[in-house]
Image (cartoon, rainbow, N blue to C red; front, side, top):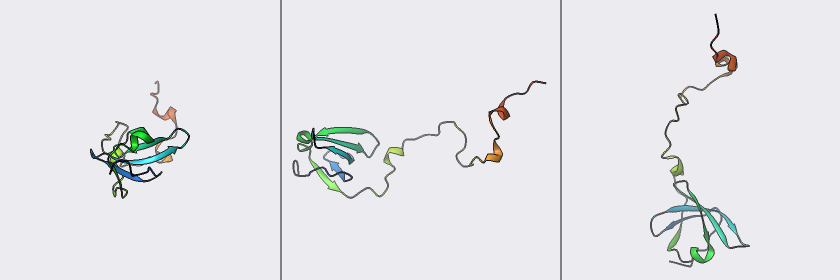
Length: 99
């Protein structure tokens, strides 16, 4: 199927090695195609190299969280409890006070 799938902005594609990607921009002036891979990376193809890919148009993934699958907690505290204004009055509340 190489060479017969024109990149459409917002469309999803899958290449022969299994990469799932969405075209996020197409610059006609230099035939550059910017894609975001499902895993989160962003890359660019030129139209001549895009036409060499074995690529197929696919339906958007049901679960679009691919780029967020590898996230780990960053040590900023629990995400279960939401902070309210009554919980924190300002930076001075967290300072140690001298006796």
